[in-house]
Picture 1 (cartoon, rainbow, N blue to C red):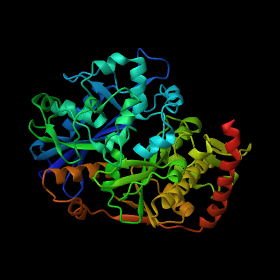
Picture 2 (picture 1 turned 60 degrees about the vertical axis):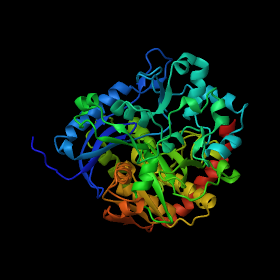
Picture 3 (picture 1 turned 180 degrees about the vertical axis):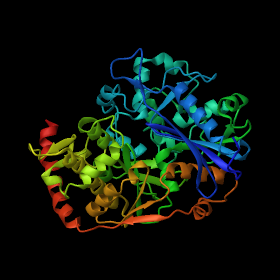
Picture 4 (picture 1 turned 30 degrees about the vertical axis):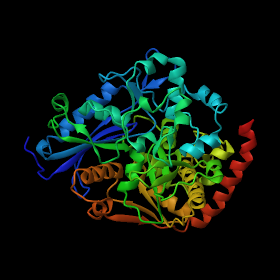
Length: 504
């Protein structure tokens, strides 16, 4: 097949929990070609029921398939760099020869729930937050390192290094070991102020800094595509592989958000964050469920709230909508749109992971209130969308208080930005303009721009951002804003009323 694009590009492996994408991006942030494959964790064959892992071999096979597909549309000679962005928290111990001593444990795996109960006896959650900027959440990487120490010590003893998911994929491409600060900041193991490891946190797992490879900042060259990787992926040997990292940070960077704009990265999970010049892990921020991560750029931090997003809508889809029907999302949206604001009194609290999000301090779990025999599935769906939007409003209030910023707008990126009904409800509930763009894949764009800076195409993040153009669509608060003001007050009262119930 003839090549259709001859300008230089960066190839981004944008890896999510449900999709693995190989994407060619040009210096203006335009997606030239892409290929996607499904992704999901697997049951661990020798594990207990419910234990979930990632099959790294399958992930690499699908990424290489995607790269080969992209190479039919983009001349491989024009691929100037490769980079990797993935979900956070997951990684694995690895030998010098590149074989794993234990498979990557998925963030969805429940095995660390007992570990949480014991870690507080060694160091309080508040002390941990002050050092790492992280709340104690079941999927925190450090909890899995402690679990491995207690249940599979041989896996740690035989390992040369621990690599996070971007590092595992980059190693398969280059044979080099590295770890980046954005991924490591999701581990609950860093001294976030110093942008380095915390020896006190690593000691909880019986580890020290020698267990990890050298730091490699985003945009720096990790290594080069090997001949073996070329055979698998069609990416020419010798192409530099540039350090990527955690997808959320690259979405924040790639969005081009202005000062005073919050960025909502909306997918299975939603992360509402800002790029801040200070690291302020206050007691108020701790109690409100804020987490801090390392920004793509040294000297910046990303205060944020992690909360459930479209994973809640997927749950509704699974439970009340036929799973095999074509156009299921169109059907869901159409039925939700036909329901009036307020969902006829149905209130949906989307706290499916009670340890995260702005409802954390109430200990509330997922809750559906106000059902009657006349309640329709469209009302349940709209109530879920409204509940996610109320959660967003709570998170905005917390970030305003934590960062002393006055947030004037919300820029939505990721898959959850594609639903106009949801975006309008977000604007009505928060009372703020909601901004989307024709470019939805800002993780990919952010990772590509970082790579273009790394290989010298751009001299700075500011220069790179100036070259990215994308038409905006703004959803402004409408006539339902007053209705949602009243319902939000009821929503908050419900949270407080349910606090005692769930604590018991």
